[in-house]
Amino acid sequence: MRSSIRLSECLWLQGELTCQPLFRPILKAFEARGVRRRVLPPHGDADGWHKLKEELRKTDRHLMLHGLQARDLKPLRELLEARKNYSILLIDWWNSPFWFTQHAEYVLFNLYGGVAARTRGARFCNDWQPPLFSLPERMVPYEFACAALRPAARLAQPFIERQFANWRANDTVRKDRLIFFPIPLQAEDLPFREEKPVYDFCNTGASCGFWIIRDPYAEPKYNFVNLYADRKRLFDLILPLEGKPYTIFDRRRFRQRLPWETYCKSILGSRFAISTGGIHQAAVPKYVEYACFGTPMIGATVPYEFPWLDQCMFPIDGLTVTPAQLREKLKEAFELQPKLRANCLGLRDTLLRLYDPVRVFDMAQAQMDGEPVPKGYLRE
Image (cartoon, rainbow, N blue to C red; front, side, top):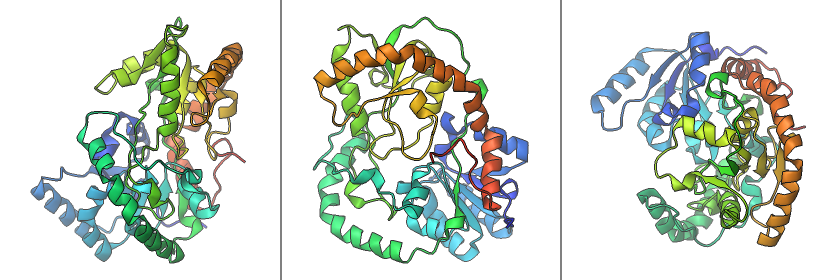
């Protein structure tokens, strides 16, 4: 049945998070489909928020909330309670306040794990038992605050679990209203060129990720825990092998965000990229970027997305591998590297087509109109 809601006719409200380079490609789809969008004003801009709310009260256009964090959503709740007529596109779905998900017409997910948790009974983080504490890795206030709040979170866990169970039992969102909208990429951001290998391994991802768990389909035991613990351990085990005999690029040596050109060059100049989706098995776009650059991966696959990934990855479990096992596995990986690289290069055109912004945008609309997710995106 064709949905009455057209994504191209929605007013897209975007948060500061969507201004990051990762979310730039979707603007190509917006331009192609004539989407009207607004970026929320800064939180200290009272006049800007007043004008935005007045604008929203005067229009009956369906709203699409995209990449809004809890502090972005809070000022909108009263208006949305009265107005309704909105949908929400979630990035880190476990971090989103449940009220907004529960009252949305459609719930769109960048990561299929959010759909799987609601339709397949999938367990967030595979029921991994987190450590009692997670120490901050960088000298930044947010990480220190998360580490400091971990004891309080553990004390509150039973009460939050009871609330989450109640929310799940009363969840009224229909399964046909759950839409998969993977993060798109664009070819011009991923220019391929042959580079002489400079590094054996590159790490271009973060190894510390703390979140507040707000969605009842995740578990509160993961509040203020480093969900990149597997990635961190794998990085840390490989790093002592630098010069013995391997060469390594580690973005953790850079305090600031990597310039895009440096990011691309480090991947193109590496024989392998280290990649995991974290304990929560998130299908991060880096998997696709690495493959499009012809750089095979070492790390962990993801359970729901990227059915092609097994052709491009040498699997190593960062949580359980021992240093001795790692040395042997890396030798095996290097023997397979030429084949894995050829697989990546052979998939480049397919992946750029699958994750083209306009195609992904239209695929989400097709799901809203009752069509299934096309082949190529999800594992069987």
